[in-house]
Image (tube, rainbow, N blue to C red; front, top):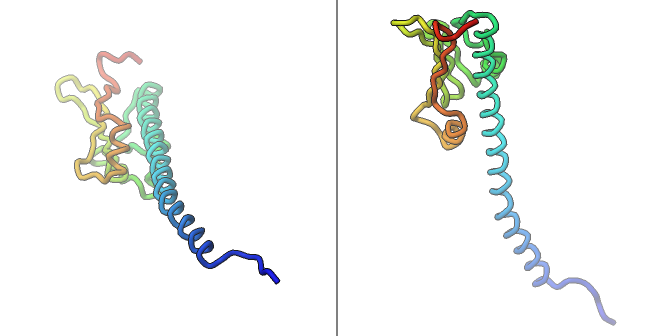
Amino acid sequence: MKKSGFTMIELIFVIVILGILAAVAIPKLAATRTDAKVAAMAQNLGAATNEITSHVVATGEVDNNLSKMSSVISQLENEGKAIINTSNKTADVIGCIKYKLTEDSNTGEQNLTISHDSNATSMCKSIQSAIPAKTFQLGGSRVKF
């Protein structure tokens, strides 16, 4: 009488192979998730910049509270991912990107400056590479409403 089935050695080999495949696949899946979060945040911050500039063009006014000029920044503030400071006219987003409203003392022109935090995590550095540090002129003598 012959018994059929797998030997203990065959089962151990299968378990080892599955373990090796899992060890390779799990870090790849985690990296994909991080890439998706970076892409989503970069897209949101680009939309925030567009909303702020569009608000100024549409109304001709600059508000000290950036969350009133951008629904994206308002949402990030509600989620605890942005800190708004109306006295400094800034929004610090997840410790990576800082939006700041400034006024040129000579011309009175309003500017939106986007800067990067130098003490950034690797995820923040990825976001910073997608959102360049830049200054946008929001109003003044050269911008016609």
